[in-house]
Image 1 (cartoon, rainbow, N blue to C red):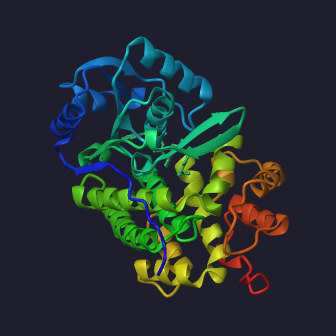
Image 2 (tube, rainbow, N blue to C red; image 1 turned 120 degrees about the vertical axis):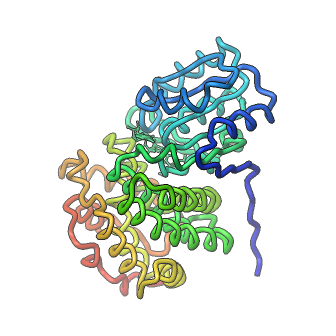
Length: 361
Ligand SMILES: NC(=O)c1ccc[n+]([C@@H]2O[C@H](COP(=O)([O-])OP(=O)(O)OC[C@H]3O[C@@H](n4cnc5c(N)ncnc54)[C@H](O)[C@@H]3O)[C@@H](O)[C@H]2O)c1
Ligand SMILES: O=C(O)CCC(=O)CC(=O)O
C-alpha cells in the first residue's frame, strides 16, 4: 500500500446546547480581542445568542450565496478598517464561505459555528463568484481553526432545507470516492459519513425538533467534508459549481438533484466505490441505496424546479466540459454530459443512464 494522506489541523467540538461557552473558549484559545461576527440577517438572533460573551469589534450581515467577489471585497475592507483579529461565522455554507474569502487575503483565523449541513467549516476549499464564473481553490489559511457543532442551532432549519443540505454533505462523500486525490482514508471517512447521513436524515424527517437525528447528521457532515477536502472536487462538484456560479442555482438543492445522475453515470465504471457506497447504505448497489434514501426524505427532484431553463443545458454542457476532472472513472463526452444534465433537468429516473459498458476502462 502506498499513499500520503494529509490530516488538516483543526479543533472540532461537538457541543449540543453549549455553543456559547464552547465558542468563547475557542476564541480565548486564539487570544483574540477584536472579533468580526459574520451572520446573515436571518441568523442574527442565533448569532446573538452564541456570541454575546465575545469581544466583538464588528458584526457583518451581508452574506450572499456563492460569495460574489464584490461582497467579499466589502467585507474585507470592513475587516481591515476595524482591525479584526478573528472571524466568527455563524450560519450556513454561504456565511462560512464569506469568512473564508476574508481569511484568504487577511490571514486571520476563523472559528466556525455551522447551522446547516454544507460542511464548508471542515474544508480548506474556498469559492468566489465573479461575472457568473465560480472559482474554487484550496488554501490552508481558509480552514477554520476551530469548529463548534451545536445541533440545537440546526433545529430551526426547515425540513426541506435540512434534506437538501444533508444531501449536499452526502454528495461530498460520494464524490470523494473518486475525487482526484482520493486515498483509502478518505474512502473510509466517506463510507462512515454516508452511513451517518443515511440514518440521520430520516430521523430529522421523523422528528425535526429532536436532537439525535440532527446530531447524527452533523457528525456525517463533518466526516463528509474532511473526505471531500482531502479527495478534491470530482465530476459531481464540478457540475454543481458550474450550475451554481453560472445560473445562480441554490447550492444544496442543486447538489441534491444532480447526485443520483452522477452516481448512476460513474458507478458502473467505479466498482470499488459502488461496493463501498452500497455497503454504507446497506443496499445491493450504490444507486439503489441513494434512491431509497431520496425517496424516504422526499429529496429535490429536478433542476427545472430550481431555476435552470432547458435552453441553459447546452451552454452548461460546454462549461462543464472545460472543468471535467482528470481521472474521472468514466470518460465524459459532450453527448453523455448532455444526457446527464437533460435527465437531471427533467428529473427522470437516473437508472435510464447507460450502464457504461462501452466506456469501461
Ligand atoms: N468551501 C466548501 O467546502 C463548501 C462546502 C459546501 C458548501 N459551500 C458553499 O456554501 C454555500 C451554500 O451553503 P448552504 O447550502 O448552507 O446555504 P446557505 O448558507 O445560503 O443557507 C441556506 C438558507 O438557510 C438559512 N439558514 C441557515 N441556517 C439556518 C438555521 N439554522 N435555521 C433556519 N434557517 C437557516 C439561510 O439563511 C439561508 O436562507 C454555497 O456558496 C457553497 O458553495 C462551500
Ligand atoms: O466554497 C465553494 O463554493 C467551493 C466548494 C464547494 O462549494 C463545495 C460544494 O460544492 O459543496
